[in-house]
Amino acid sequence: MRVVFLGSPQFSVPILQALAGVFEVTGVITQPDRPAGRGRGLRPPPVKLAAQALGLPVLQPANPHSPEVLSQLAAWGPEVIVVAAYGRILRPQLLELPPRGCVNVHASLLPRWRGASPIQSAILAGDSVTGVTIMLMDAGMDTGPILAQHETPISEMDTGGRLSDRLSQIGADLLLRTLPEYLGGRLAPHPQDSMKAASTRPLTKEDGALDPLEPADALARRVRAFDPWPGTYLNWEGRRIGILQAAAVASGSG
Image: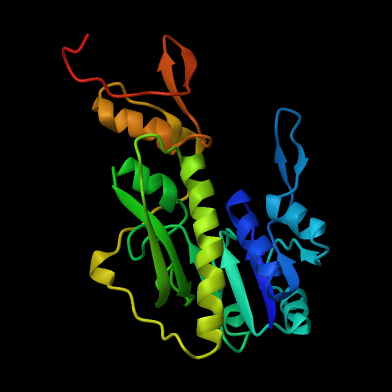
């Protein structure tokens, strides 16, 4: 079974590794190298490094819908494309290229928390559970029909990074159980209930600013949600003070 994989951050790496252990991954598409760190040197996305370690061909196009990229995708001949946190909205000409469509591994229980920051949004909202959804992609933002879901509780110790790591492994395991059933015609997708939808947006460094007037439990969730990125901070007397950990303490507990 020939598969092409699209993904970029660390969340995507266990999913690619699991996929490559079972299916014939003929190619990988990820984001271009980006400036990072104090020296602003170019840093490759984690998926690029993982694909190279697996000996897989990698493309890093600025535009995944260019004729050159679509031609290469067609040459790789995937029956299905698997997407996990690639970081770009995919257009119909790419979504319709593989015969069995594009399957997305999304880090929430859709339709709750569609979009770019589902893990952080679940923690910020104080959700008690989250999970992973395997879905068929359409032209909307995480609006396609659902193939499978798996829940996991959110604890008061979970940070954005810790929860991401757990959901990544859950997603890898769920994908390996779901994809053969779907490709074998034994699993039918079901539509999302759009009345229950909640959306997210991409995060920025400015989202890490803490407002001391917010309730303590909301501030503590923000610190956890934005660890490790974008991080949280207080502006105090003209200085930016980074906050690494926080906990809400009941009033009068001293």
